[in-house]
Length: 171
Image: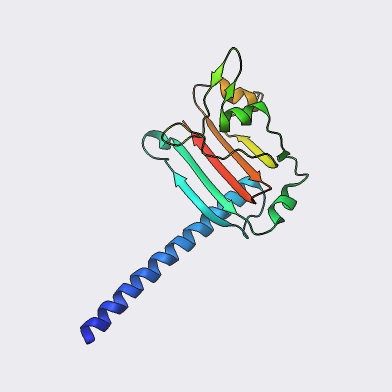
């Protein structure tokens, strides 16, 4: 009987310890995103967290989706200088979904392993683009698409589903 009780307590301790690590990790991630976006996201809940950053120079892509139960995030970004309302500009459109014209076809940059766009098509919302590679005196934004390497953060908030998609790409 004592053996079973010890095993039960050991398993319970491991399970509680692991769930605490996840909650702590989610809290850390939420705090980092809040800081990077200069907008509080504490009342959201992470529903997707994928990160391929590893290897040489920590290249990779991360995508985090955060679900909100109310319009608090939307209200927080309305009118903020670094957030723009839809429709997406050509640069963000290309980064997320690709671009096609008579002369050019450009695949999306933020993709899954099959090169399909990860973020679903959104019609109502707000977006944020931060070019982490821009230097003083150099253009940002559209300039991203003309580089050999990419280091940017893009966030898109879907007002209809109340989901924030946060992506970082480093190449």
